[in-house]
Image (cartoon, rainbow, N blue to C red; front, side):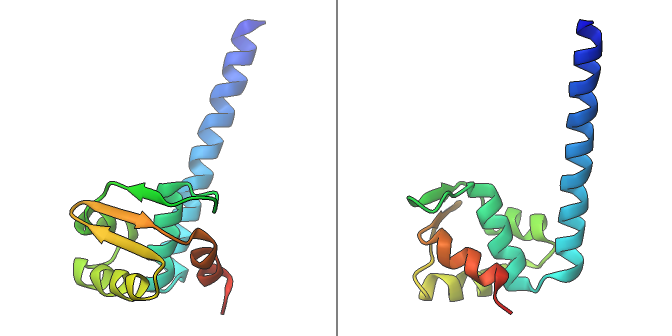
Length: 108
């Protein structure tokens, strides 16, 4: 009986990981550069909107994660920083307003 529960958990885990992969591929194919960066920041920080969250990642690593050049990521982060939504530092990105970032994802 325990082996059935373990198998069920394993199958659920595999299906969830496949779903996550499909979501990421869909993001890369459909979202603008800004929305890709915003989606990654929210995903990596797992923000609940109640407090600032720090993501320890370089701009190069973020660029690789969203399928953009470092220059494109830097430009998008600059706009987000000027809007007061994020703060940046060496290998550090801080989400200051997760609610506003989520709005970017849903607004057309």
